Image (cartoon, rainbow, N blue to C red; front, side):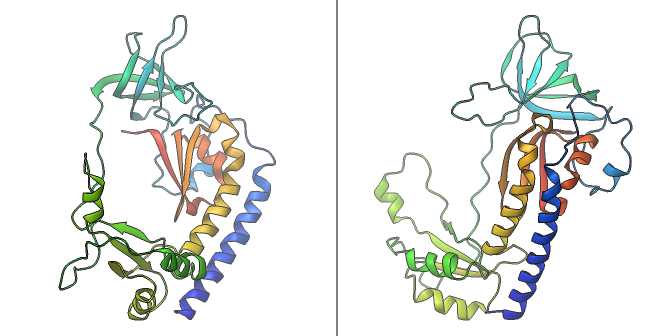
Length: 302
């Protein structure tokens, strides 16, 4: 199934892993001492060599973020990131930045603040209501319905399909997912009604002829099936390579609170959730395979 494309992908992956291993070996040697309060003065070619589209905050930039404010007697007010908490960590303001321009009272509910980033402090200019929480729409089924419509019998066994796609041919597929033609059942829907809702197993093909793949999958799965080309997405195997390489490379930074990382997730890239991305931190992250990392800072340029 697509041997030429598969060989090319594996050659590229092996080259990538070799490069990342070399980078990772030096990542733990000596990390620069960086605090979130440092300014951008003195940053040179290290930061400018990075991709220009990084959401970097420079000293004096206008910034925006949504979180809550914690004011404690005798201490500067802190603006707290909506970072997830572990079961043993009860400090909901562990990830924060100092702020000025607020009245010194707690704002326990989410609020959006706009202001200026100045020497590591968020100087508040304006306070706004937090945007309402939103749920992204369910992805549409990327295949047309068959002539008789989608089946409502959802009892088809997925084990053989999963084994074929994920275990036996991970280099040829992305992770299968379920689409709901009529929308995901929400609210207090009885279990038996959910069972009657049509759902479709979507299989994205990285390498292989779609007709051949569909024939192979239909012999292993009798439910609603949508087989489509994956486009630019990485295969399950290549995602595993990216995950292994980047997760090893990011470990030294997770253990250093100066970098302000509070969550990571990996798929086609490693997404790094952190407090703020300053030029100093970009320079500190230079040992990472930057082409495979996506930064999602909480405090962002306005």
